[in-house]
Length: 391
Image (tube, rainbow, N blue to C red; front, side):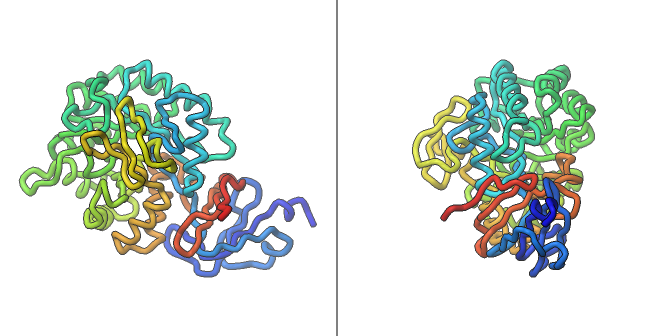
């Protein structure tokens, strides 16, 4: 047996491609990449290590908006915290993610970003860090949600250079309110530097959103939540999000942040390439019920939701595999289209779709094996198993 054959792993089962499901297929892993994906071929199977999927084979999922998990938060700014998050989300099929900050002062944000930059290359047994998502501090105080209002400030154009520099050019998404003083100029500067500007935590009007799009904004943070609502005479941010093809929208499909009917509305209006499933997860993900912290605010987990003392939602306990299951049920869309929203759509937004986000020969072997109920059994990142279910 050749060394190449010894290193070859063949996954067999129902393969979820970006445009459909192959009921009897294989995915061949050689080294870090996918060597073949399609109908079974003897030349690949013979002498290879074979893994039979009880259900489906998905591309690795990508979460562009997550604050914490496994008892850790990005703002803890410690090596252990970022490793805990990466290893926890891997259990739920995530092979790539954007550690997401909350509103803080500049020293806090600089420390958090520096920690991500330093630790990203060292993560071997968890999901890969694909960049940084800066959520706040340039948001609307009246739409702060679970963001600490003490640190909310208005942006200035020079803040774009600060954020890019302090992230060592790992900044991928910035959430901000476009109606605030200085916002449009800052959006232009961020877009000029290749950063995705996301409209969120905002009381903007429909027309103000259009101005933000013209300035370079192209994304919407957790659609419906912490933003001006849809009204038939003032469509607001939600109206723009649903009707503007220039915008992709994030969706927290846990059944609490967004009603199932609204999940169906978004996925119908925006389709697979316009809808991006996220978790907005916080440190209580994968942890027991109890009291936790989010950006200095007390948060209480009941095992289903995370809430502030006043009852407002504070991030979520959602996992991305659960988001796929719930969105499939709520929307009535085929599974492959929903998986697309949690893999290829975010990969495209981050500019990494040539390497990940779908199952195709030549791409990185970021793969998830799930059972009939779409529960994660095994996760591969760059061809290496980073999670295997033991029960």
